[in-house]
Amino acid sequence: MFKKILIANRGEIALRVIRTCKEMGIKTVAVYSTADADSLHVRFADEAVCIGPAPSSESYLKISSIIAAAEITNADAIHPGYGFLSENANFSKICEEHDIKFIGASAEMIDRMGDKASAKATMIEAGVPTVPGSEGILETFEETEKLAEEIGYPVMLKATAGGGGKGMRAVWAAEDLKKAWEDARQEAKACFGNDGMYMEKLIEEPRHIEIQIVGDSKGKACHLSERDCSVQRRHQKLTEETPSPFMTDKLRNDMGNAAVKAAEFIKYEGAGTVEFLVDKHRNFYFMEMNTRIQVEHPITEEVVNYDLIQEQILVASGVPISGKNYFPELHSIECRINAEDPYNGFRPSPGKITNLHIPGGHGVRVDTHVYSGYMIPPNYDSMIAKLITTAQTREEAINKMKRALDEFIIEGIKTTIPFHRQLMDHPDYIAGDYTTKFMEDFEIQ
View 1 (cartoon, rainbow, N blue to C red):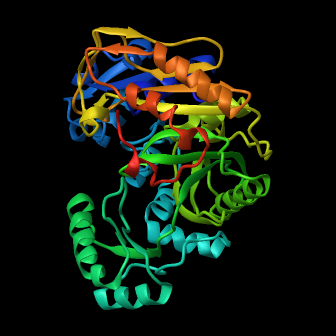
View 2: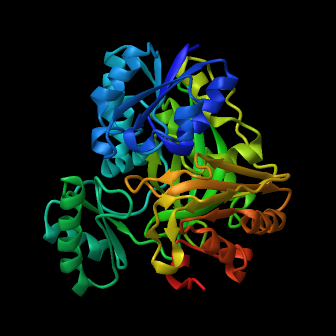
């Protein structure tokens, strides 16, 4: 087992990893930028190393500084959390070259699953259902036009190196294809330095449902059931729940088995998610694989009583998994509390938290790194907390979430708490009748 783990991240996920490490008797090293000197992950780690100024490019994304911090503190493993370098193949490779265990996927695995066209080709080979579309990168507009006619409109253009909704365009008619092709390529080039495009059939009334998987170094994998992530704004998740209100027992089994098949086919090691689009007829199609822990992992932990961070560490140290698949025994919902103004287009709202009251009680969990007096820097992602409620039924979990949101007081900045409180009263959400298009018609009041 590892003696000391450096957490190459910040905020609530860094604190989350530190907590599990302490429970396992493993020493921890926090790294931080000058903007995060007062963050709780710095305070609660056994050691802390400043790795640079506020900009991510000069701190949390600077591989040389992180490796140097690991070496001077004698850390024998690095946990990357999510975001930043968590899916950076070069970082994984450099850790290996410096004899530091990267608690995550190998460089080869990250490369294989990180490129969407490559990932889709791999899933087709593995026998996992995929969305009809191009088999690789589309080289010319003429090729794109021909394929769109073959698979039928509507279609979706996607950047092969994309993420966060960048380089994506929905096209509903042939006359709109040329402009969409040019706009998507231009945006992809600007955002990722790569204008490679591929095309898929646009799934109507889609739900975004992901399966949590864990694989070990022996090539064995298991799943921990699904999370419904369909409530999104501009392809950014706002709230998640498990089990999905759209699921049937058959669909859960079929999707779980497909995710395990995918993981075992590529001999995946570590925690990850296989993400699917599910249409209104409950046909499911592989979308992508995330080779890291997810923001929304706590709701899975709550319904199956399973510490995913601990499992990541155990698998990375060579411990085999049991091979057992897990199914939800309770219902859990997560609301992402962001420092954003929902009444002003979700505009970021950094600043000082002047007053904070965190909700509690049975079935309420809050993962956060903030406190009263904490200054939220403008340099990073705006998520400042995750509020999770768990109960016997979905109705009870929603009612518990309403109560917890009413108790959650954050003053000094704007947050998404009012949005989530309104969401919990929305009749379509209460009925479980929502898709990834839900937020297009949602009006903040």
